[in-house]
Amino acid sequence: MISLTLEGVVRQGRFPVVIRMRNPPLLCKTPYMEDNRAFLQLTRKKPVWNRTRKLWELPQAWFNDIVRKCAQRWGTVYVIQPHNEMEKCARACWDAVGLECNCSCMGKNHGAGQPSGRWYEISESCAISWQGESLRISILHANNNLGGAPQP
Image (cartoon, rainbow, N blue to C red; front, side, top):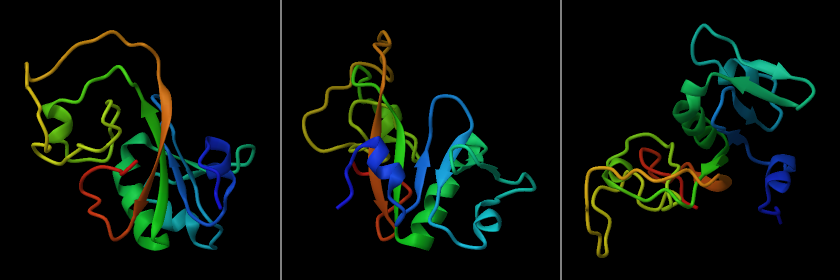
């Protein structure tokens, strides 16, 4: 059983882990396969192997594509990304196309269109103060719709 802590998820070796922080680079740990560098390369720019951290460094812009590719190859991928409990869910999240989600729904409503339940739209967006962040661990499976959000 994998411990759903940051350390436990990164240490396990069965499934890939994609880590998106606020600042580049995107980090990716994959189960060992001889062709991992070629598999992770999406453009002319090559993935960089960080020997100290024992993971790949990739351009931040590759996030959506790398998550989808890893889920297709290994069936499951862990996604670790910033989460701010103070951010509120809004139309921007509901109508999102990619996999990046930082708001308080933790991906539940991300890319889902109008979510079920009683939602009152006050405006298109809402500005609040940044209270700090934590990291969210999501598990994505290849058979899920990866056009929307990671499921917490």
